[in-house]
Length: 595
Image (cartoon, rainbow, N blue to C red; front, side, top):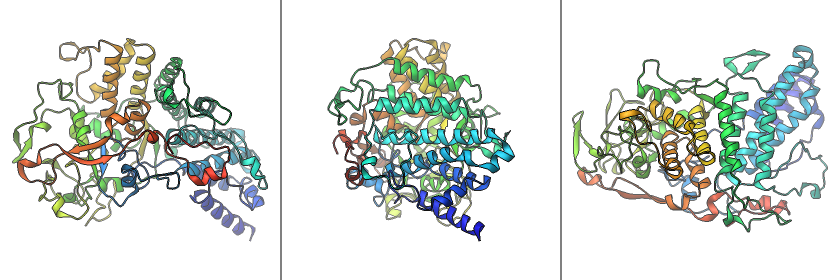
């Protein structure tokens, strides 16, 4: 009976933690004796830790649970029934916070802190594995807690720092009045936590003291350092570093939430943090063993556990993402559409932009595979062809028995006239990271191409390092070294690569533009662009109307730039609002500007 009661208690405790109804700073579960029992046995304690891991973000659903793809200028989500559409038209307020993760991640933070405080009580682990395993589990929970703070900060800006505080079950309401901290204090706290766990975490995933590939996705030193890299990259950027437009955004005691003075040293911290990941020597850019550029670019995502992947989530919804990106011809839903703005961002095969290259043409057609292909899509770099499904491009996957051209003409097999909702508004679809073996859409047999979803990879770290170094030490040779490594892997010339290379950027501003352009292409559809355009403070100039081809036309009339959708941006959209529920409970809480 005792054993049965324990497992039922664990079940309800886990369910309570996962419930979004449990809000920020909720109290300790009522049955505290049962929870204490959890921390006496190895198995229940490990299940508790696994639950803390369950909060790690699954960014495969970009229409209902995450807005990072469809609320910027790189992609559009087709359907109006999902909250991403409401966000794009500005239908959000403090009383109706879309994609609200505030309470969700504070539940995770609280669970991590509770675990850290009680795992030392586990006598069974001590008897079997000694202190080493307990220390590892504590470091994992502490790293997860720091990561969840970072996820809150990237969405909401300054946050409430709880530290190691756990409120008592009978704590009065006055004890719950904890204010948000200035953003720099949040950064310094999370950074120090990551430093501490980086010294304690293993270099590779471990299971009972032994390296184990089966434990992939668990916290390691490389993951902690990678989180720190992105943390400081954001902190050093214009949105947070000397942003005088936020001068009136202050705490109750008059301190600025956002630093009003520019600090160049933040860029050095960002550069050093990225270089620390590189210097581990554990990761390398993924390259196809046979030297095939296309397979290299696809393999980054489709070859599980490869050398470039730093932090991944094993359990995810990527098979549903696959179907949303596939054309109806393949049993897909034509749902995630690349914008014309993003198409224009891809380089030509000579490595130059479309405004610089003599290879670019926006008129005429070339016959390929028996169909006309618009010259806009000719002579593009390899990443364009692995990332984008465009009109009359060849596709093979899903329910398709053989490769065939995919068309988005009004009356075509994937066009607007063929289905009431499932059609691309731009005349393009995302092809990057689409598992074409997935056969889970209309008429499919349920086959899924299983793989982890990448949250951090070395390609990002290279670009983090190059950007930060250019801001701190312009002209440093490492800047082009790491940008060119990305370009060469993509099959295009680097800057200064001899006769076939491109000119070395002449100024810091020129290098900044080159790095940002590279980042936009290399990290496309990986949930970076939303945060990049905000931290660079360029969102107002790049969002608004997004374009595509004219999907309301057939034939050659299709190939005309047309407004596809509007992705609204106003100054309040730098951060999401804190819900009115939290504002009403926290009398010291200051709302984000504009809400």
